Amino acid sequence: MRNLILAATMALAQPALAADCYADYKAKQGNPLRLHYGVMQLQGACQQGAARAEVSARLAAQGWTLLNVLSVFGPEGLNERRANAGEFFLRF
Image (cartoon, rainbow, N blue to C red; front, side, top):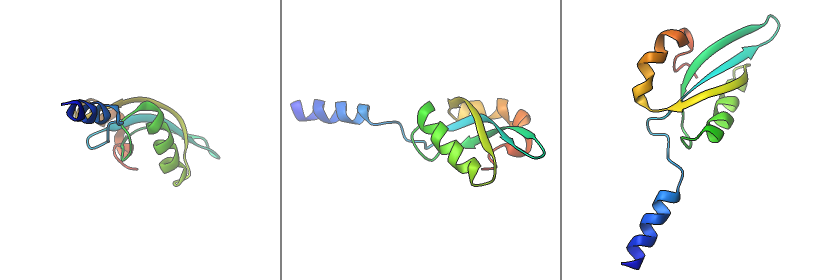
């Protein structure tokens, strides 16, 4: 019984994996200045801090600079963000 409780506690302590986790963010690119709002599916932990690092790295590889991760959410939030993200919806 003690092992079962320990296993359950350890499982709950692990960060949530990003199976269906998304982040919406704002980014910029300079010279000329370009701004965009986008939505990205996360591969790592489904947490704000981890999302910031992942989104920043993926954007930087394409010449963009992350300004802010606005939120981290599940698939239930995709449809309401699709129109605002436009061409940057799940682009990166």
